[in-house]
Image (cartoon, rainbow, N blue to C red; front, side, top):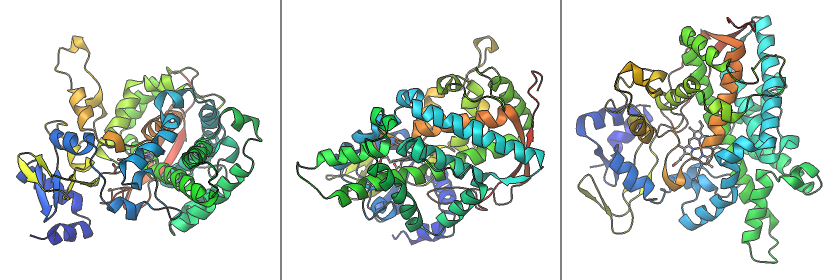
Length: 450
Ligand code: HEM
């Protein structure tokens, strides 16, 4: 048996659909080739990801920046664990909710850049490719978080500059490496001289200092430490630019198809304190946004049906082999699951191809209905992976996604102008195949009945 049958389908952009059909026909475990199996089950999640099997070498080839590895591509467990510890605290949920730098950065980006920009579009009846708009917001937010507000990009402030950045990114990684190396070096050259950064060092400095302290005393190869920390930071920038953008885009797409849901969401958003208007300069706290059930349901359902990374996340069966669903799997076999199939299991998510945020909202006891099995749904929602190699940026992603969606839908409605090519690509980062979603924004008067 060879894997050419599967590779052919993958090359023809039918890899994920083929996996879904094969699992529906053959069950939770299927053989893709002589040394590769795909598993879609809780047993698979437990024995592959919770057990912390090594990543396959595919990651090393794919996520290689500044000529060195970073968290996502490091195969070796102990190096990964040591490096993850350096930055983990900067992406922890309670840290992000309390982080003053991120709060003032979000206030500035949303209140001073995004909302005025949307008003301008609304006044002039402009149409907007929101994918590009969201990519700019994502990069401005993550660079402000990792380099500090003083060194963040301002792609959203200047449409031409933002457009040029996004266009040039498509030419490959080298452009991004040069672009951010410049900012990072400038930050490091002023290290310790800025009061703001002395009190609360940026993620980029924390990474640099953490890696430097792992080296033996007297070690002077700054180039190596710089490349390792820059590789890590650039990976975070790319992750935010690509994945946050996909989720923001599909949230707006789905809400534009459901104007009544926009109205319901707006009612919920207008309970926030302070209420988001064009005049405010401080946004409601991330903790208060977290408590909004409809907003949360919309985000979860979009992460499910439009997972930004729906493809296989390959791992390697350990020395001595393993058993999966009663089969003996030899050491070295590639084993994987994928969000695409997990998120379309009709036993867990009835009518899985429907985008239905309500499925994430528990019924009220007085409705006397069987509520959804939320703990099981949460187990099967695999948008951020699981185990020791899960997404380090997931709380940053959720917090920033909610903030931007809240700002847009408290103050505006969105209408689809052109959604040609909105189907998701069959690839690791799975955005619209057309690379665009064109919307129109309409400003709403800030009256209680709106
Ligand atoms: C909606 C947004 C996002 C989605 C859907 C997403 C998804 C994922 C997934 C599925 C993985 C696991 C990969 C694997 O096991 O092979 C992952 C890992 C990772 N993500 Fe994200 N991500 C998102 C946002 C972010 C952001 C904002 C950052 C910025 C810090 C980030 C940084 C990372 C890193 C560094 C890893 C590797 C972690 C490790 O191996 O220790 N991601 N992400």
